[in-house]
Length: 268
Length: 302
Image (cartoon, rainbow over all chains, first blue to last red; front, side, top):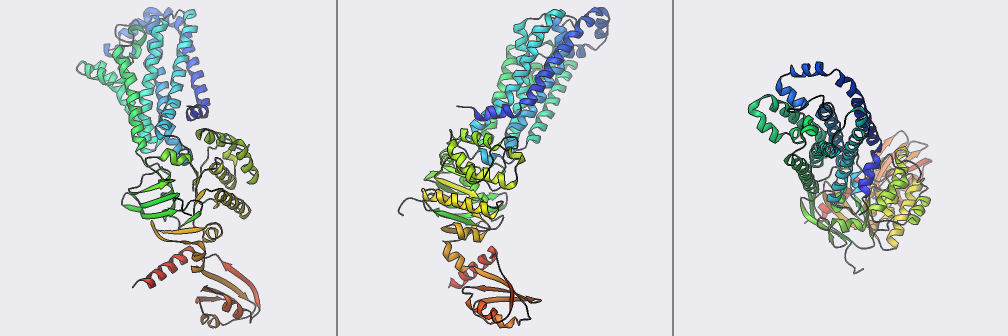
């Protein structure tokens, strides 16, 4: 096992990985450096937030979470939209592209004329698409752990690790959905498009769930954006069931991808 | 030559939706021969080859390479096969050397000495990025990767289509050397003269059906000649129409285009009675060979 395809996949996209990692570090540092200013304006911010409908407040800040606390602030600013969006876009683009690009660029004939199993090719490609998500998630952890305390943002590092892992898994899930559709169709854009549309729908469902009491149970069960704890991930933690679902989805989707890919006629 | 066949296709059939791309192809390649797979574009040559490599699955029928089923034992088939795709695409950002190292690693390592030797013979600069290479140079890299592990079976889809005549000859030499060390070579082409020069036997594929398998010598005898003779004086075309073997004469200005099969002696001797400015032999049209083949097939029928 030399993992040649996996290493090739990483090497081919190292520039975008470096870009995303640096972006995540800068973004994290920026929000951390804003914190003292926002905390000092204290009561005004709280008033503003209390004027929001409770559902919105819960969706963006987390149920029962104090926005001005370190966990509340980081959760709202980084974990409600920014970091999930970054990892989701990375996952969907890489997942759609990894296998299908070989077909669309016409290099699959050359690659699969070597004695490598399609299942192994798919596994290594998926690994190459997903590892960058962990790298960027780790970068978020590092910048909060290193820069946070000096600005008054001290959070549990273990809880933070679980929160960034959950968001990485969220990106991995949608990434593997893109991977599945792309490996079944041979088209990166169909894979990425369907996964992106599904992600938007699930995000909307999560918001609707917190606004419409009758839909809360359904939305929380179905939307991966609830599973990862959302903005409350740091203050309230990530549930075991949520974490398990976040792990199970990409694994199951990867398994289906391999089944679909092994049975297909590859486009010339 | 009692050894078992290197490649066997039995009733190999491939449908794309309602279109039948390959229709019950039965084929046997002897170990150690160069087999030409002739057909015009879209005849099903590439479809056959991609079935052999397990890239697509046949709708019906089966194929074996070195006795290994191409579906169940695809990995072993590919381990012992070198393949040059017809529509060759490389990774544009890799240098030729990086690409060959990558493909070599996926084969469990190949001899760099062999790679360098092939590159030297083909005059291929391995330091160039594939994306910056000309068509011809990319094709050379494709030839190197097909040959670098000295496979027992070579499957080459239109190997010399984008190469200049000098390089064509070098590639032909490499193919013959592979045969001489015992490899079996399956080479597709739409170019009859190339097949005639290179191959031992050839099969003709037409609209997905294998219509003939013959010794190459027989095949070229069956082929017709097309001669264009440019005279320095007006010449009556009817003089040639009556000659044995001549099937068609067309005239424009002082040039006569004569289609004939078999012996050209009478045509040349008749032409020699006039002042000849130029004489060209056009490439034999594959379609003509097919038509001839069908004609003879129809004549044989009771």
